[in-house]
Image (tube, rainbow, N blue to C red; front, side, top):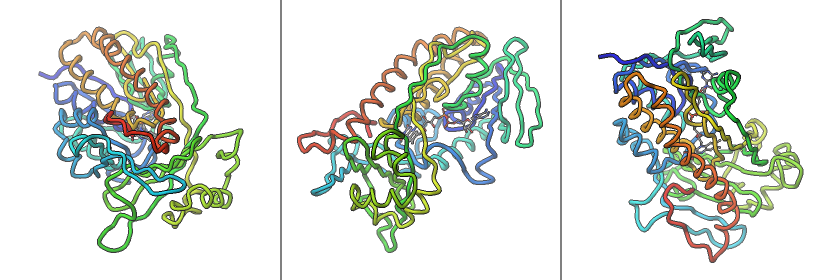
Length: 384
Ligand code: FAD
């Protein structure tokens, strides 16, 4: 029996996983994704090149039957490798042994695997289709392709997995205020790359760790990629003080700063000038909403409902957990999506609020406390 039709906006990490889980439960799912199909044109955009996958997210992937596939493309991170300004680097393990670890995965690789799985489960994927508007009374959405050609699509039930800048959230908020609060962190980030090394050991530094260069008010981190490179992220105040992205506007000023503050890291980034000048500064905020849904017609999930700062490495993991809860509730609810959506918010919002607070706290821990020699590694899995 084919169940209700569900329109999903956004085929990113959360949208693609949710689509597969719903299709496997018999829903007729169509996904509209703004970007072109990454499996044909290559993955572009997105907010970080790789991500830390923790047990919560992995459990959701296992539910979708994808745990083993993802593990084959993941690099184990046993703990934090802390690189102080002076003195030796040291590993702070996340757990007592390798049963308590997190994993580094490629955002693009994971997204493509999830899209393949969704398609194999019968989901109809539409790429290059950007949500412009949603008419919740007429129950249709308006989409535009990259040339601006518009079309309407019937959407009795629409779910927004369209990320932190969600267009569905804007349309829902125009219909009924959602109580949106955005709290900017005041710090931004920029990605740089440690390329893979020549020779048999492809990794220039310890592969099985999340590297941190804590410097008090700011930091660099690096996560390993399967082919031997590392994605480095510099987190720094955005404005109004030094150092900040305002006072380090180009590669020349930034290289001088790195020579002082990250002397062991700078030589590992041979394309520092190109990376620094060509990669954008990303902004970081926490998003809170009072209301995640409009009765049974429209719902927000993942970053669209609860974007957080990345310092606990839990945004995707939390969004993945959302998808399993929602798919189960919808499968149990028959055609009464209103009750399922209300129950989804009731169950998930306290979790989202808790992880948002922990993510903010963990920025101070990562950039500052871990450098204290008396600091003992916490055993909270999923902590970066
Ligand atoms: P997104 O990944 O943003 O996907 C939204 C999708 O919707 C995109 O494909 C987009 O193209 C599409 N879209 C947008 N607008 C429209 C529209 N109008 N119409 C149609 N489609 C649209 N999380 C972790 O768990 N671990 C980490 O280590 C981690 N590291 C991070 C590092 C950084 C620097 C940042 C910024 C975030 C990090 N996160 C991490 C958080 C993680 O990136 C997000 O929580 C996750 O991407 C949310 O997935 P999503 O599918 O909800 O949103």
